[in-house]
Length: 177
Picture (tube, rainbow, N blue to C red):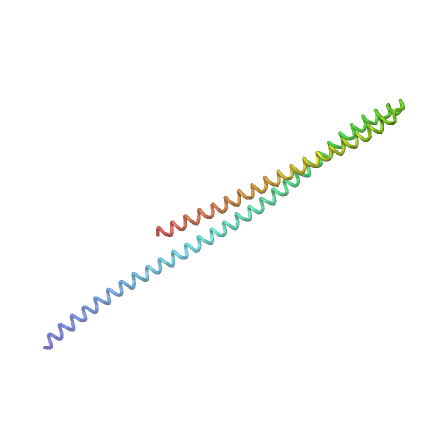
C-alpha cells in the first residue's frame, strides 16, 4: 500500500511540476506579449506626437505664407495705385496744358461760351476717367482677393488630405501588426 501511495504521490508531484512548468511558460509568454504591446503603444504614441508636431509646423508655415502673400499683394496694390496716380497726373497735366492753350486761343477770339463748354466737357471726362479707374481698381482688388482665397483653400485641402492619408497609413500599419 505504501508503494502505491508513493507512486501516486510521485505521479501527482510530477503532474504538479508539469502543470507548474506549463503555467510558468504561459505566464512568461503573456508577460512578453504585454511587454511587446507596451512597446508598440509607446512607438505609436511617439509617432502620433511626431505627426502632430509636423501638422502644427505645417499650419505655422501656412499662416506665415498667408501673411507673406497678404503683405506682398498689399504692396503690389499700393504700387499699382501709385503708378496709376502718377500716370493719371501726367495725363491730366498734359490734357490741362492742351486745353489751357485752346482756351487761351478761344478767349482771344472772344468765344467765351466755347470756353465754358470745354471746361464742362473736361470735368465730365475727368469724372468718367476717375470712375473707370475706380472700377478697374475694384476689379483688381476682387481678383487678387479671389486668387488669395483659392490659394488658401487649396493649401488647406492639401494639408487635410495629406494628414488623412498619413492617418490611414498608420491605421493600415497598426491593423497589419
